[in-house]
Length: 609
Ligand code: M6R
Image (tube, rainbow, N blue to C red; front, top):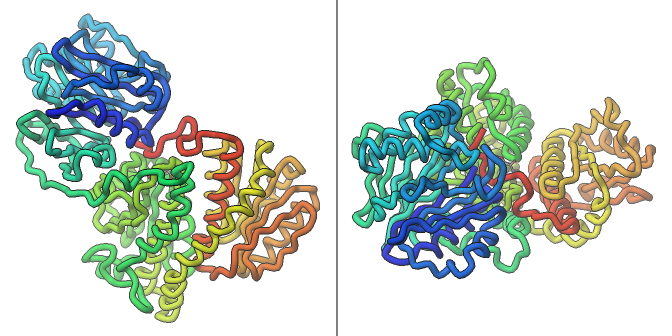
């Protein structure tokens, strides 16, 4: 879960390497480094901390004029986040490497290399690749051949970039299981973990597939397979531009992204609905044929995306189709039975989450009938590996805490529920009603966002607390889970979510004045039961914060604060009620002063197991 950027150019590469690292910081941010090649060999700078710390460490070197170099931002796996373990790693004088991924057979290779006389300077698995390339280089005398021979010996995941002082105008990359793109610029060629890293220099890319190598030089780009056979690859022109991921006037990306939800939801719906129906073909040309045969749904995802799947389970089953939802890391590593006519749905903002990719692979090996992904990254591995594809149009999400990716996933899932269950229990009137609600959704979200001041004021109740409970029923139970995840990941307050009916089966024992309880209370048939749960908490002196539908009629009394969210139809309520929970987590973290766009120990895209 690191980010790499490599460049060969006719102009100084340091500014673009640093800019690229800043764009990749979401992938990891515990240490960073850069190795620049000039006529005297490598100039390497590494530092613990953020890219800003690397810039400070570069000091006067910031004006370096080298036209070739490689750079890295790290999320530590093997070895602590120290300067010694930061990339790039170098052999004495000759080779430099950057690596994203995990080499599973590193221990065996390390022992072999130590026997061969290699000395290791770090605790990383990456240094094993470096020394093996060095060993192969001495045999082959050619960097590309040395890398090709090395990667055949690696087990695990990697996206690597290597440069040699013996061949200073050439960088060799290779990929298996970790993302890699090649940027085609006017002044040079580049390798990076994603396109966003290179948007300041190009919008034209080749996407590198697993088990491929790439060579960039002044002469151009050469892609091959592991046998050295040339691969022809189309140019992909991105419609993103460098400014799309800028902070604008917001203090944090998370806040910007919370506020972008009105537009993101509207963009996700655009071209997908007509007056009273969801359009056919929006999940792929074959979707109608596949959906007619679909008898069951299996959803697989991680983290926030998993919570979106849990909401969809209620929707699918309400309209007559069996749906199971499972965390990808569990699904991939257990035996299961999948019904014959199952549609496997993966959900992912990044499309690069390794557990989700592996779970998809397992399901395909087990012969699942059809696969569909709902994803926010068009050029991601998940999109390429899935039969049907639906893009959420959330735009770049930089904050590690997922916000607009979640609400647009829910919108996408609701479109999927309609498209499939109209072949089951969903009537034309139901479809028309859902489409009407979806059409009104952006305006309702906009209205909900206006509650921010009220929510920010209540956030003060939480800042001295160590724990919090979130309660919901029905589709709001996964929303309570999402609210708890947001609070814990950015404010570091321990938060748990419970289906409100479970309260008296254990967690009620925890409730006292030190344990705030947050409940989501839309106006549905479960409301009266939830009101009883609220009374149970109040009776035990617990402090409550309730996000309520205007119709819910829950009274503000001592110890119970109510925030009315408007009148929200039950079907879209989970989407709308997510927003105040995101804002609550944001404002608690803001008061606590955490690094809320880059919370400790986390990374935006989890590309390691
Ligand atoms: O890119 P994905 O949607 O596959 O990522 C899944 C999780 O890693 C992600 O949702 C994570 O839980 C977020 N940090 C939550 O805010």
